Image (tube, rainbow, N blue to C red):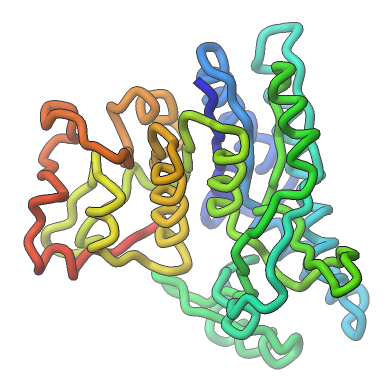
Length: 332
């Protein structure tokens, strides 16, 4: 099978860890082992998040030149190269000799009229205390959002991806059997001017939405979104919290999920499956193979498999009560 794997930012930096090269090398090495296991039986294309890294780059830029910070498109390109290098090196160490791997900087076109530019929602960078957030908000004029576990983070516009520029070369490499790492951080955001020329824009594109677009363009069988929770949950944090194993896009449409975390993954999963993909999976990195095989995580398909393939304790999503539908919350 052909699988597009979208690695969450936690694959590179665990919550609460220092943002050091050593920590990222260690975490990427673990991620590469899981990816290499999948690659033994399937063709994989790897995308990844960059929230903590692009936030760090933005802070460094602001410290160096407070009055002239580097724009997010350039910072995104920097992180795509940096993280791509880490993933490629550890993957090449984990994959059999003779495997070809390539990292590509990927520009992604967005609509300059996208309403997201007026409503920043994408969290990036570290989590601040209330006092720290007050200082950086005043200094940099950033929009901030409260994290579900306390603290605040910077939020930036997250427009929808319209087209992956350079999809032709990506497809050529994939068809040649190369393990491609691309569309990192959702891709480098660019807009098309009236004269047809492209220019970078201050935004961060959601990696899961871009990964779904990439999977559709490459006719992938599976879109796999790996995060730090074992599955999508209904009634997250509530008395009736339960993991959702198998579910259809129509059933997910009746639920609500956190806009800045699980929501984009759900939308990406539904879009991919409705476009003809066999399955979209959401779950933990260490469960990658079991998610693909239908034994872990949340699996989104147009039609559900028999009940014996569901997670322990899971009920059919189609049979949820109205109260349960209204109480579903996402977490990632």
